[in-house]
Length: 284
Image 1: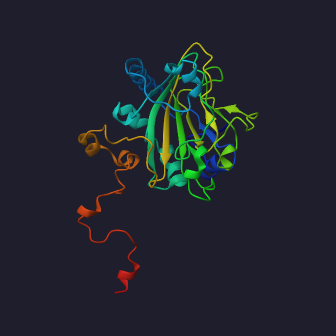
Image 2: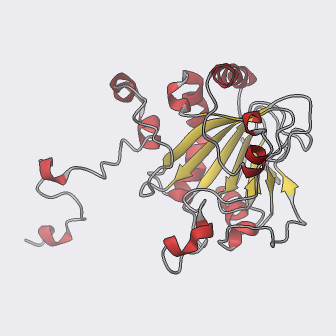
Image 3: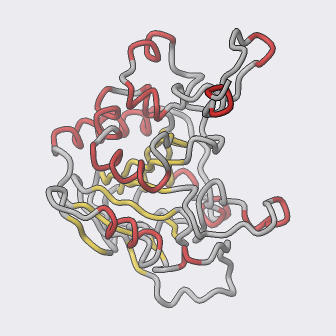
């Protein structure tokens, strides 16, 4: 996993690593540890007090009666100002604006907490390709030559080999395919990182949480970024009140998709003309 400095990095080199090389990078010591501690406390509070929430790619955990050891806390936009601060970091906006377009959005913002004994996940790819094992439901000719997803991980605990740091297969993002038991996983590596770091990976890179064989939890924030035209996997809007949306800064409004007016109810729109560059009108 290639490391980059938050003070001095070449955007082209970073994006090339995500698209053409390993598919995974890390920026070290991006975040203030007090903010990480605050986020961890909130995540632990919800994980300790809420009922079991939906998670994904955990067939082994469910079959073995250990699904409760893989916990999710969803919709972090509405769970504390610290989560807004973390997701609006300048590095995120600089890189995602280039990779996914300047009006990129957030498709999901949650926390994952693996407790000791959690068996981990099957290797998979992420939304919008996460059910690509049903390839017949996707467009003909779909490929990984351009990005329609990028994932970010912000560790709240030490993500080590022992505690279940996310496993991945380097360069597997270069060919769009959902992995299965017949694929070669011999080059499997792990996204080892520490609190304060910021990890990015290509959502088409085969990956999955590893078993937590340590004696402590392994929590991290999981963020999905998408181009503006992809339907988010998590409904981030419905649980936010109007006051939150009204007072959100422009970065948060963009992430929530509030700056992009579609889909809209065309039958009540007051606009008579909206889309286009207007070159024909200029000649009249």
